[in-house]
Length: 73
Image 1: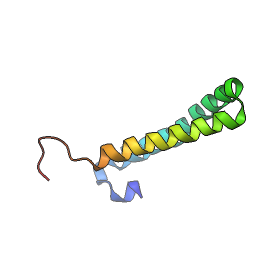
Image 2: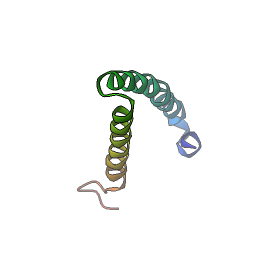
Image 3: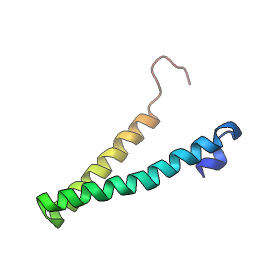
């Protein structure tokens, strides 16, 4: 979907960023989850990871839906 709504000049960059997020995010998330499980145990580590994921999505959503200061929409 991101590729279909992006301008033709940015399609390659859009796919590149998507692949970085999907492949890189999975690897980094697995590493951090494994480390947090070693420190906190499975239940607490997954609870912490879920809370952090929800918090990150709320911050990203807030940033994307907020109009920039000084720009009229």
